[in-house]
Image 1: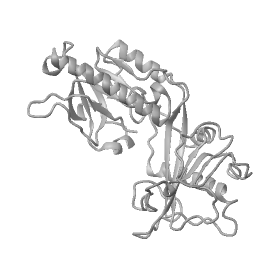
Image 2 (image 1 turned 180 degrees about the vertical axis):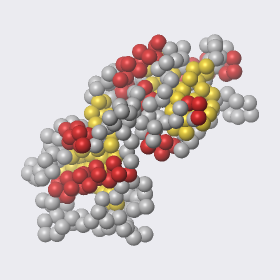
Image 3 (image 1 turned 135 degrees about the vertical axis):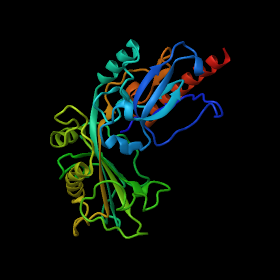
Image 4 (image 1 turned 90 degrees about the vertical axis):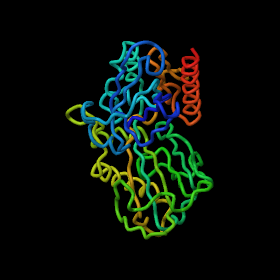
Length: 337
């Protein structure tokens, strides 16, 4: 994932003090200037990278001298650990070199234990007949897959005897996205979307698609990573190219067919209109740092997210809100002094 660093304040004449820049992949950062204040008289963060957004994560970043200038910022909030993890798609070079305290923070983040996952999104032209659930959390799946089921029938620890069989425990969670409240049947996308297609990809325009999402177990993710590595032979992040996604999608789709086979007896699972695979190298943090967020006032940098408090939507919200409030108080105090 491309690093997403949000500027807490941008002081440029003729512009408002707060500005949102979307679609930027930050690839390098440098702490420049002197002094502890904000604005033109103090130290600030110089960010460089690409305005191509997440697409920039597919290829190694160019050296800083040929990256685009993304501006000068008083403070930075890291909403993810990836900027501090060398070799990851979201690594931002130069941050850990800004100070000894940032180098220590980077080492702490890199030591945090995390589990990988693979996700499959697959859509069909017609609803899958016979499937008795919209959401299934599979027993003995080897870890939490993140919750967030559908709006209808559920399965899982139900004693039906079918959950998790067939695919050998490939998935920890399956959910029919189309069953969620307010979701149209076509919410999955179409065959023209970026990604890999496994099987048929000839979805007719205007068709209502039934969309399913399946999240792998950690064990199956590790096995897939043996064949589709996270890191290449050169030690660099292995990008999720179209060919990479297509190969993974083919395996995950076969697992999905096996999982659904007991429910769709009497007919074969149809060819999908859309199929897409996504790798999460650090999907779930198993041992977070144990703080709501981490804050280095001298460097005007905060770190929030699952690496701080652990996985889960509530933790993400609490961590991000607390980090934003702390940085906001610091900037207001500096502006008033």
